[in-house]
Structure formats: C-alpha cells, structure tokens
Image (tube, rainbow, N blue to C red):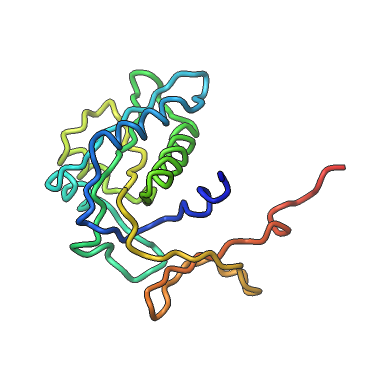
Length: 191
C-alpha cells in the first residue's frame, strides 16, 4: 500500500554497512526518477552514482548529518553503502526548479520498496565534493541521497503543545520525529 511506503520512508542516518547495494539497484532508482514530471519537460537533472567504498568515503566526508542532534554522523559500520548525487546540468537549464524534490522523493520511495532507506542531504560541502569527484562546473550540485539498509528505528510522534518540531533520540537510540497534526496543516477546507 502506498501509505505504508510513505510512512516507512524516513530520514535514516544509520545503516548496516555490511549490506552492499548493487549498481543495478541504483540504475533502477534512476529509471524511476527518469519517469517523473519535469518543469517544461526540460529534464535538466543528471546523476552521479556510487556503491564503491572508496568513492563513498569521499562523498561521506562532504556531508553534514542531523542538524538537531549533537552528532557527527554515522560511525564506521553504520555508513551508507550507496549514494546518488543529483546535479542540474546548466547546459540544459540554469535552474532545476522543484524537479530535484520530485525525483528525490520518488527515488526514496523506490528504495523503501526494495527494503532500503536513505536520507536526502542538502547540507553539502559542494566545492569539496566537486573537487574530490572532478564534477565539471556546468553541473550544480543540488542534493546527495545517502542509501543503505536501515539500522535504526525511526518513530513518528505528534508535535506537542509547545510546537517543537525538532527530532531527537531517546536513551535506546530510537529516533523520534514530531509531525504536525492534519488539523494544523489544513488552513481552510473546501465546501
């Protein structure tokens, strides 16, 4: 059921690093992205893929993890085993609009369907990543999708009366994510 895929699609930040993602899996996820809508059908997005441990380490070194936690990110044994770097090809179009949001969610839902999970990361040391992977200047680095076999539990909570939406981890390292109620989100219902 689609609703179950959406609920399972959390921002996972710890993975079973012994689980290897196959190249073909990333190609299948990009095939899903290829089918998504694109503003003016320009399709400016391009993708760099990695399941190579050495290349993965270069990518990992350019990412920031979990702004609300005092945490430097996954430790050895918990790191992602696959990455998709989403780029905008400025030779096609200068700006990707919202295309990268559409493809990111599509890719993540496809990953969940395959028993994987991930995290959409926008906090990137872009120039360092460009240098380490020799990404040509014509490509804007938009997002990095970190993928793997989830090795943590993520629980959805209702936002409390104080309105605090910051996620947190409890003493058992369960990751809690507050979500606003449906009633709070809908401003005005139609007739």
